Length: 397
Ligand code: PMP
Ligand code: GLU
Image 1 (cartoon, rainbow, N blue to C red):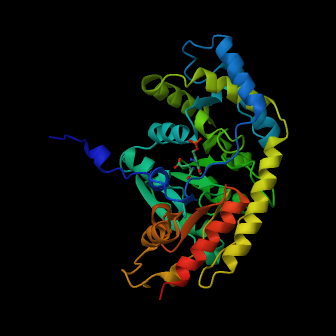
Image 2 (cartoon, rainbow, N blue to C red):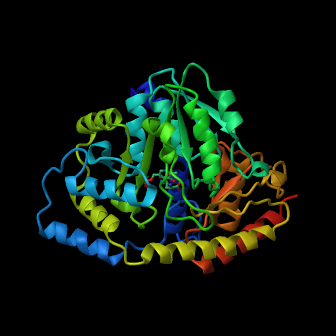
C-alpha cells in the first residue's frame, strides 16, 4: 500500500528531465537518438576549475561546510555582484545552495504562504510552476506569444496583481525562449513592482553570461525595488558546471537568513568540493566563457537558419541562453496516418519516435503551441537533427 502525501501527488515530473531520461533510455537500447531536450552546455568544465577541485580534495575539504557557503566563496560572489552587475550584496546577503533550482525553492518556501499568488511569465521555465505548487502557492500565468517576441508587457503584469500577489518570477535571458529583456523593458517592469508594496521579485539570471545581442541588466539594479528583489544565479550554465550543483542568491538579509535556516534543516552547507570549484570558477577566467558563448552564438545562427526553412514552423531568433522555441501550431491536428498530433507534447513524441530527435513539448513551459529545442550540441548533430525534423514534419498532412 502506498501512502503518498497530497504534496507529492500534486507535483508533476519535470518534463525537461523526463524527456532527457527517455532519450538516454532509447540511446542505451542502441537507437541513434539526438537529444535536444536537456538544457546544459555540452562543454566540459574548464581545466582551471577542475584543478581547484582536485586540490580541494587533497587539502581535505572534507568537513561540513558552513550552511550558507564558505566565507571566501560568499565574499567572491559579493565581489562578482558588484563588478559584473552593479549590485551591492554583503556576504551575509548571500546563500550558496545545490544549484539555482535549490536556491529558487529555498526562496519560494521562505516567502510564499499557502494561498499566496505568484506571477510567472509564460513561456516559463518548467520548475517555477511546480515549486510554487509545492509551497502551496497559486501560480498566476501571464502569457506572451511569438507575436510579442515572447515578452510580456508591464501592463499585463499590472493587471494580474491582486491583494494576494506575493511574488513575481522573472527570467532574462529566458529559458525556454532565449529572449533577453532590454534595460528599458526591465525598468518598466520594476516601475510596476515599485507601485505595489509587499510584492517581491525573484530575478533568475542564470544565463547572464550567454547573451549575443544587448547587455544583461539585473532587476535589482533598479534602486527603488532593490529591497524587494532576490537575485538568483549559479555556475551551472556560464561555466559548464551543471553537475557540480552550485547556485546562489543575493537577497535582503531577512530572506538570506530564512534560506540559511531552511537549508540548515534540509541539506546543510552544500558539497565542499563543488564550493571550492565554484570559488575558482568565479575568481578566475581562462577565456572559456567567451569561447562557449561564441560557439552558442554560431549554433544559434545555424539552427535558426535551418529551422526557418521548414514550412509551417515559425521562430523568433533568440538573443541569449541556448534555446529556441518554435511555434508549431500549424502542425496540430495533422496526422502521418497513424494517429493525430493533438498538442505539442504529441509532436515531441512523434519527433522522438519518427525522427529520433528529442525536444520538449511546450505544455510544461505554459506554451502549448510551441516546442523547445536546446541547441547546446555540436554543429554536425544540429544539422542532422533539423534535417530529420524537417523530413518527419513533411509527412504530416
Ligand atoms: N533557472 C533556469 C531558468 C534554468 O534553466 C535552470 C537550469 N536547470 C535553473 C534555474 C537551475 O539551474 P541549476 O542547474 O543550477 O539548478
Ligand atoms: N535547465 C535545464 C533545462 O531546462 C536543465 C533541466 C532542469 O533542471 O530542468 O533543460
